[in-house]
Length: 300
Ligand code: PPS
View 1 (spheres, rainbow, N blue to C red):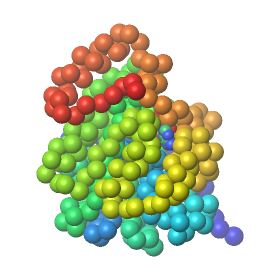
View 2 (view 1 turned 45 degrees about the vertical axis):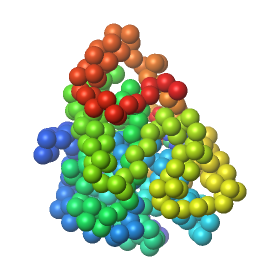
View 3 (view 1 turned 30 degrees about the horizontal axis):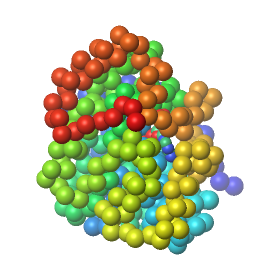
View 4 (view 1 turned 180 degrees about the vertical axis):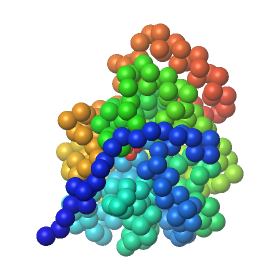
């Protein structure tokens, strides 16, 4: 009989600390040396995001594009979080993203990270790996992160919405400042051509169009029928119903507090921000987001 290793675990909320200038928790730094020494392969695809920007969505799209036809059983038996390992996540003694990635039988390997660009293991650059970066507007991103931190038993206590929003503006979140993250990756794209920088809002607006752009970047040419099928399978309602993508098998999430597939909308921030919070946020945003070539939409 298999024993659920999580049962033995003392899963608990933890504290942020400063890690080389970025707020982190030990779950993502415990295995640092192995993360930094990770040996990427030239065909690995790194899916990089600030948390809650659409990682699971893009992971599922890529998994279907590469393996949807050849290994259909994968879709019904392996949760997406195991198909696309989260490189820096380490919950001892359950295991680490590095081990999961090293044991992936697939080619290419799809690997998830939330690391800011300066922390990405150097082998990804040396091997000229493709990177898909997804960014989401700050207002919806912080709302989604707030609800995620409420439900996720290894994240720091989120506290109330108002204090959470201020901590987001100060960059006191796990994986640091949203502003630094999206800008850091945007800047990297100027010198490293194999980054496809996508926006959550564009995906909501026209998923099929964004899948086309992804295929172009990846050099894939699925049939029209296959593309239509994938576009349908990755719609919010379908992913929410699907136990392999809705994270219902993830033991660190408390679904009594919030679902993982929560709303999937652009503009939900309007249900959370007060007028005063919005004005303060916009004022601060202008000061931090100096590179006007990086533009986000908060409504579509
Ligand atoms: S994580 O924990 O960082 O990996 O989370 P991540 O997957 O990046 O982001 C979760 C948010 O993405 C939404 N989502 C979707 N929206 C629209 N359509 C689809 N198919 C979809 N899949 C995931 C998910 O609902 C979370 O956003 P919120 O706003 O909380 O609903």
